[in-house]
Image (cartoon, rainbow, N blue to C red; front, side, top):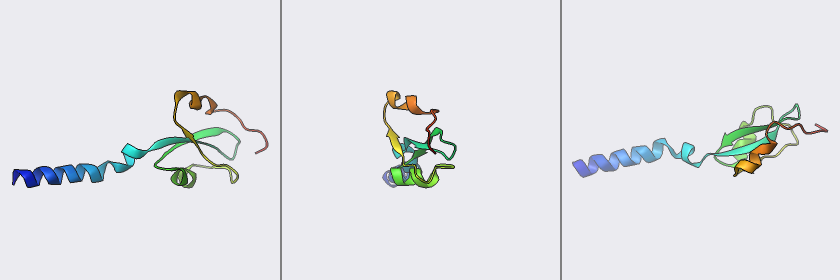
Length: 78
């Protein structure tokens, strides 16, 4: 019984936290030309959930502290 209970609790923990454990930060350009960030599991999800993303914007994976220097910058021509 104890083995069954531990297995059930382990499975519940895996099901409850997968999105949080695989989320990454992505940068994108919004409709005002500002570089913003969104947290998502992958690039496609980042594009779909980024608030006010410009129609010509893609996303850039921010994987180091140096990458975050672009956040808040303005992009011309938007």
